[in-house]
Length: 275
Ligand SMILES: [Zn+2]
Image 1 (cartoon, protein in one colour):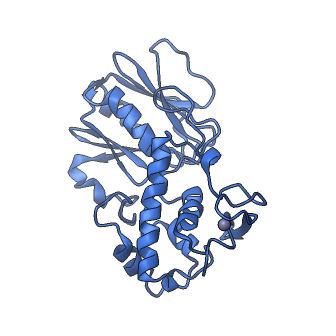
Image 2 (cartoon, rainbow, N blue to C red; image 1 turned 180 degrees about the vertical axis):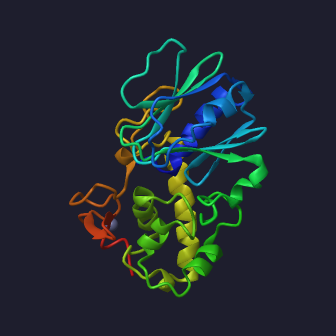
């Protein structure tokens, strides 16, 4: 599934293509996404200027004068720029048609979403899908103290506490395993037992892991296509532990272990990562 680095890479890509441009038509071929695409949306957005392309968690936020369009890529979604004359293919559900190009949403599994938040409903932060999101990993307030405060008293394993997204958003399954390896923390350790100095290490490791993924144009999805139309680099190629079960740890040579936590695979080095 697209994780935060893919969504941020997409945001940067489409920002360059659509911000400041006038949306001529929104074409909805398939409204049955995770939630139905509001039927009034094409009429609301005809000939409207995209003022900004922002992101909160894994939601892309396309800001117009009269409201914000929320776009989520779900499990399998991708957005890409295509020429005006390119015919849609199967699973190309939504088009944003501009004068110079089309932004096209492709989503075979249809767990994605295209929603609308009218300006009169107040700040987007109050939207029900966004209110429970944790802090952004690149927010200046996110550090070891923040994590330590969020983890205090929690018996849940630290890997699962990261995935829950209430402490910090954007640390999905791959990045949780990779960050814990970098910080030398056993993924099974209770979140509340992670000391303050180790929380400092973990916060730094999360930022470093996400930065590396962004730098490589991060993609975790096999058929992911970046906003430029180029296939994304596969972050897993550079992974230290993720999907490397049985292979030697790049630091100590011990075989990487795979366990299941909350029905998700976790990968770690039993020697480099301590309780
Ligand atoms: Zn190791």
